[in-house]
Length: 219
Image (tube, rainbow, N blue to C red; front, side, top):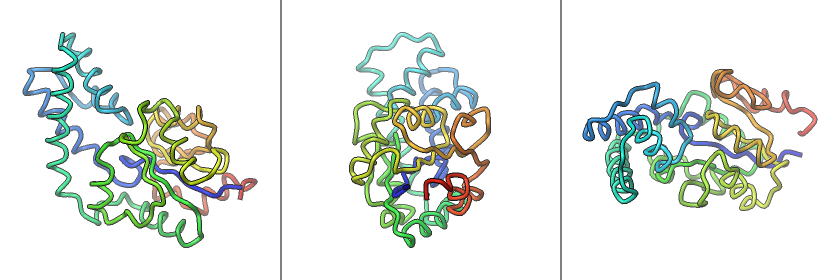
């Protein structure tokens, strides 16, 4: 029986992708590094340090680990400053309605995000009350595609992986949820999340009714 739901944040609850892109772009420009939306797509669902390494490698740059840490911190400072512009109007269509429905039906809900700024974003959205557990980049040492963040969420919800449905929009997150033994709803195009158990183009389509229908033997 499904008793809990675990949500990625970016691209599922809200879309901070453009804010991340602009922050990485500003950082890359400061280093005279090439960076575009194609490279940015490779960063979806990836930790900050892994992201800076992807950008560094794309530019064949030689940078010390200390400098990489400084650059990652600078990018985060740029990004966090931009979060002040997020409001409760910035839920992705269907996300707030789904969270409300889940709480009303008594399901346990956790966040499972690679972001270390998830609490800031949730507070800006006024969404903290929907979540029983906050799992983010501060909670585990291994980021997606390792399953650790979802396992952290399930453990702190006092549930087994097979009692949880994960919502993810990134390939690395889909891989992580599958590795952890979770049931999985992919949000986005087939070429990115087509290996999820169930896929929807958007959160607006991924209602509790549709998920119950897709996993009817589990409810």
